[in-house]
Length: 259
Image (cartoon, one colour):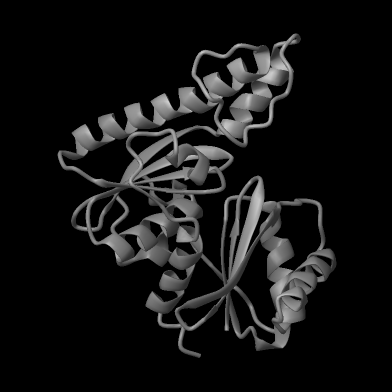
């Protein structure tokens, strides 16, 4: 079986594939100060609780935007799974032209999302990932990675407001308020953050589509994608396992997924 891991600044998403079937997936917090032994305790607990056995994992592929995690996960794979992991970078998407000025600057997660989205939908796309940052990635009708945009993530913006405005409370962003015009401070903040980001997303999509000169399909992924899909006018589909699927596809396209 194939273990796929995407390391983000806030969360690590992991999944196990049996062929093309995603058997199980998990989302855990990113702990930069952990060790390979501590990560093994956590991973083994997740595997065992889901009826998975570590010895059945024969290969691993990882995308990461957190450099300190590379050594930790590399050691974990070698020590406890018995093999070296494959790491995703711009070269991994050799079949997808990366039209960035410097392809190596593109985050591994963005490459993975782009590969998975084009493989699945086979059309021009804008992929929006609601993670620590909110990223917009444009893929052409020919399957080229055109570039995109990066804005502060929703939770970062909310937390910055709390930390820098002394009289404003911390508000949990789990659901939109019933109306845009808030009747108390908490709902006013939720409205500004959630509906404000909906306006950002819809505006960015409109501008990106105009530059692409096409009508791209708009796909959302990431932890807050279901929430934002409910308030954005432009999002057409939510694909919560897009990154994991992209990792599987890249591994198979590299010719290493059959062992």
